[in-house]
Length: 445
Image 1 (cartoon, rainbow, N blue to C red):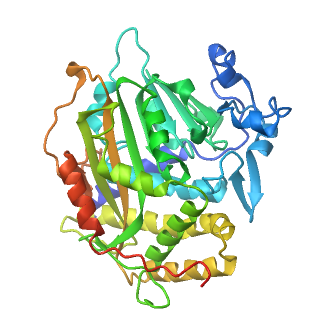
Image 2 (cartoon, helix red, strand yellow):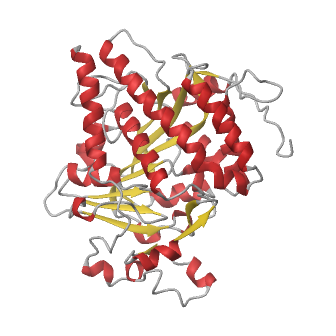
Image 3 (cartoon, rainbow, N blue to C red):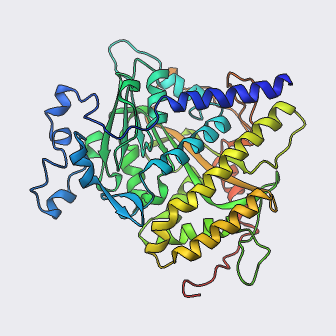
């Protein structure tokens, strides 16, 4: 076996091991709730304790502490055989074992692509460098399984890490670091209780569940301390083909040779918009970057595109990189195939039938298994630091076109591209949009 191949497989095993540590156990109790937090209105009330309140009063409460399984019955509901949160009508993906398994595979693929838990490594490390008399704080919004936040708590044991999600997080209590805690919260309700408190804020794949995106972005950025960094990572609901990342039209009755992966992404985008997601605003805001945000220092802004193959078709002249691409491709193929099952409640809610969605799933599975189309998923990245940024802590700025991985395997993932100017960001948007067309059939077809 070649050294490159061993390195790629070692990295995959390492990520799987790190992920497995936080695997599912739903029977949570309150997690690391400090006495001071328990004494505040933001943390003291569980759902059970607020059950006497009317719905209008309840809607104004942002944060809940999760105490017992009795709380879970109020936070979760069964829809079409899947477990869905009760707090947000905009985020309609499940919170159950099959979804958590899918998200763990997705997490491994993204971390391999980034070469670690986060982009902007020098900036994040500078921001989180220990300082006497100051507690570093990390916020993970939409923490999903909690794996990213737990791994950050281990990587930065001197920092306090808070994971926030709409539903209870699956984790083994014995595996939770002492510097980590989890909270139930709905970002759409507002985060004023977090303003000015965090050195690092991580928001990954929650854009489809946000309404009034510009307001939500302003609210989230207000949670940063001066000099703190925000890291946005979200999905592109369009898919691309081959290493050239060319847009492929979706499959329809009029275009049977189109991509079923593209069709599913387009239907998902349409469904999110129909239930109130401000998805278009998220897409345009993150692709344009944070240069025009009045809270963010424009000199610290960058955007990026992380491309992950779907299926084991990708190749590379370096055997280690080729093996890495195939491993990521296998994970992402499983992610999207299982993801369609997770989309059923949402697609049914907007008028699609289960039989119709199952037909799409079979066609997509065939497409990705037989590698009829070489499909690539894109993740959009954007980051920047809140003003004012201390000069001493600013990482060196430079013209970076492709970031290199500093992963222990020494195998560099090749499809991560970073741009450090607003002009370059807009050029990339224009290049991606050249071939795109909206040819989806109507919902009544």
